[in-house]
Image (cartoon, rainbow, N blue to C red; front, side, top):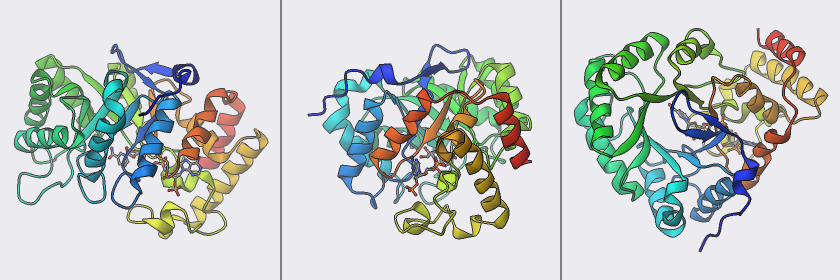
Length: 328
Ligand code: NDP
C-alpha cells in the first residue's frame, strides 16, 4: 500500500496552463523511456511514487511508448491498480496517438478511425475510464485538419478525455487547428513541442502563437535526451541511455559543435554553483509561456535531483545573455 508524502504539494510550483482552469507542475514526468519491458517493474513503481511525493501530478504517456508499443500504458495500468486508484483525482494523465501503432492503414497518422480506436485501446491498457488529456501526436499532411480536430472534439464530448492537445505541430498548423477547435467549441489545452538549449526551433513562431492564443506549452526533451547533463563530455557512461538503449540518442549526436556548447554551458552552470541539467531545466522554464517541462528519469534519485531547481535562484538577464551567446 502506497502512502504518499504528506508535504508533496508544498514542494512543487504549479503554473496555469494557458487560459484554462488547469494548473500543471513545472516539472512533469514522461513515461517514454523506462516504462517498457527493459526496465524492472519495481523501478517503474519507484519512479512514479517518487515523482508524486515531489508534487509531480502529471504523468505523460502515448500509445506507442514502450518498448514494445503499448507497454508503458500496460505497465501504468498495473500500477494504477496497485498504487494510484485512490489518488486518481490528484493525477493529470495524458496519452497520445499519431505515430505508427498497429499494422495496416488505420493504425497511424490522424484519421478519425485511428484516433478513436486508439484512445479506446489506451483506456483499456491504462485501466482508467478517461484520461485528463489526449493529444494528436504529430500533424498528418494527408488528413484534413477538420477530420483530426473533429475526432478530438468527439473524444472530449464522449467523456474519454477531459482536454485535448497537439504535439509537434508547426506554428501555421497550430493556428489552423486552433481555428477549427474554436469553431467546434472545444478548447485546445496545450501544445507539446521539443525544446531545449540545443533545439530552439519553437522560438521561431510557435511560442508567439501559443502566447497570443493563450494555449499552454509542455516541452519534451529539455535535457536533449541527457546530453545537457554533461554526462557524455568524457565518453559514454555504461549506465546511460546512449549505452543502454540508443534507438533515439545515438553517439553521432555528440558532434564537436554540441560538445563545445555543452562545455561552455557547464561553465555558466559552474559559476552559478549549479549542475548543468538544473541550468538547462531552469532555462526552458524561464518564460511563463512554458507551463511545464517533461522530465524523464532512469532512477528515482534523478527526479529528486531535478526538483532541486525549485529552490535555485532565477536566471539573471546577464546569465541569459551569456547562454544566448554560447548557443548562437
Ligand atoms: P530528457 O531530454 O529530459 O532526457 C532524459 C534523460 O536524461 C534521462 O533518461 C536520464 O538519462 C537523463 N537525466 C534526467 N535527469 C537526470 C539527472 N538528474 N541526472 C543525470 N541524468 C539525468 O527527456 P526525454 O528525451 O527522455 O523525453 C522526455 C519526455 O518527453 C518523454 O518521456 C515523453 O513523455 C516526451 N516525449 C514526447 C515526444 C513527442 O513527440 N511528443 C517525443 C519524445 C519524448 P539516463 O537514461 O542516461 O540516466
